[in-house]
Image (tube, rainbow, N blue to C red):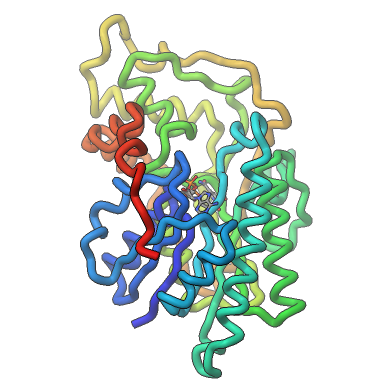
Length: 357
Ligand SMILES: NC(=O)c1ccc[n+]([C@@H]2O[C@H](COP(=O)([O-])OP(=O)(O)OC[C@H]3O[C@@H](n4cnc5c(N)ncnc54)[C@H](O)[C@@H]3O)[C@@H](O)[C@H]2O)c1
């Protein structure tokens, strides 16, 4: 049985990774999470009582506390997902993105490297540091057929993607300079259960249910390659357990959709699954409202996920249609989860929560 240290494990993708490891494998997990606004312990309630699960409330910028976590938990692998992740927030206030995504990744790399150097030979050889990144580091595509591959040059557009690109470079430098055993993955847009309602898909679902406008940036023609979050979690576990040191794997869903198509899909699913609408709403689609585009908005992202399929045998199990149906159904069945996010109680209750360190 291995122990995996998952940073950002209370976030959207991190919590899916933790649920997958606890529910579908024999490995154990220690979550390291600062619990920013995006960290939600409610997303981990299904696994919180499991004896293979532990939680430490820690900021990855805090080196001395990270050293204590490594000494106490003795992990075999690190999966690094902690980040500031919302592009709009990075435009309004880039500082937290520089702190966590760049300084935090540097601090974590150094804590992990010093821990790794002191391991015995067998554990040292088996150790992996898996850095989870985004396809946004590649910038955007303007053609209709070209795809991001693992060798596409970096050309980030937003403070978010620039900070993630910086962290990817740090991770590669730690491999090359120190021989530290790193692997990087770059993934396309995720969607699914437990997604914080500032992101496109949950925002549209919840606004529609409340009869509020559905704000679509620009003309809604921006294209994203959508991946169901549980497929991503399985890919990440495969990479950390079977991936090759020094390699990069792109992960995508082969599901390119215009933003406006995504919003129409949500409206159609809601017509079927939640037909009794808020007062004054005839059709969910009537709520669609076009708003001023985001500055520097990337036009199209699309991933060539052939390498991870060929080399590690991973393929997404959900189509866009099946994943969206699961997602909309989940939000309809889990009103308590999102009400506690909307009214802030998910965050108020954890004030005073302390790490066991
Ligand atoms: N969401 C996507 O579509 C997507 C796609 C590709 C890659 N990614 C990457 O995957 C990772 C996870 O994304 P997500 O959507 O789950 O993000 P998220 O915003 O939902 O979660 C981030 C988590 O990190 C924690 N965190 C933030 N700053 C921290 C700090 N200084 N110390 C410790 N913990 C901290 C937060 O509390 C939260 O639990 C990120 O690195 C992101 O760049 C996301």
